[in-house]
Length: 407
Ligand SMILES: Cc1ncc(COP(=O)(O)O)c(C=O)c1O
Image (cartoon, rainbow, N blue to C red; front, top):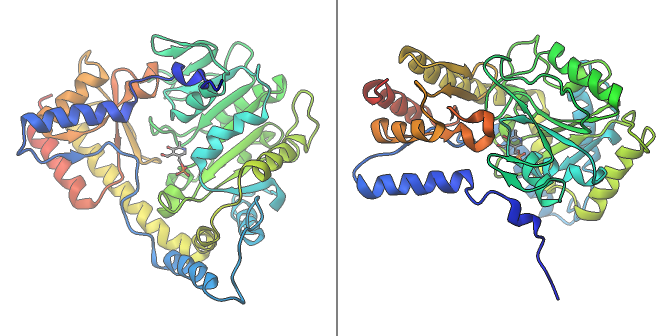
């Protein structure tokens, strides 16, 4: 008799974006003439830049010619793209070998799947609030207990609060797998080298592993802030970095990412090189390689021209962030993030909850935001606003907040 994976029953039924849709629909049913302005979703909106489109087209053209057609490629990725990423890291003085880099169809699947190469009894630690995939993938895999209130049993939540600048303190108890994300979704906080160094020291001492999600690396303009965890000494011995072309190149729908598993990474029962070969084994068994078209696009995105063109798109999103920030600050709200990250993290006025502030934004300004409580218990009392959007839509939302939000 077949049975289902009961761990799915542990997952929250109140999935954040479903509840946002429900409330938005209820509002529109009552106010059919209202024009909704969306600042909630972390999805890219601007077209892919010309040099990268040319790369994608080149990938398509190659498939039309018997001389250049390719079918399955290496599961670990096109050697040219892996080499281009080695060069990409070298610009930050990070030396990696091509076989430490695994090309994938995006950071989300890698962030979800990486837990499968570690022992079942590993104690998981996450930033609170966090991108939900880290927790949910461990729930599905049976690494946690049930949800009690806002937290799952068996997960160590590391609070990110105004007091600690939204970057957590190193855990005081023993944890084995630590998920960190910088620039952070949802808080927009960016870790300093010193802050990451504290975690690297902890991981080296306790033979723990850091899973570092750098999907928003390209939004860091302050050169003192690390774009990769490998800019921190010792990180190659204890950290895996997950990355993406989604937010740096508008590839949210194209699908391309990569994961770095350095050879020196060693843990209990696994000598240097073993974790790298386990991830390779996992990928060759369960993944058939990223799209060859997407990988041609990735190569173009890493070219000098691609990087320069993409930078102007990123600058545009960051101009959105500045506009939103200015308006909210003028309104007297407490605003965090949005400087080296495309997300702004806003304290709800008074003692309002996240959902109360969400409802207020919707009712008064017709603006849809994301309630912070959906990202973990420490997100309660905050909302997330995203800087992804066309300029005219962002301006309309900002004008509406300026004119209608009563704070
Ligand atoms: C922190 C973080 N990591 C990863 C992703 C997903 O990246 P990808 O599109 O490469 O799967 C997102 C998407 O919003 C994200 O916020």
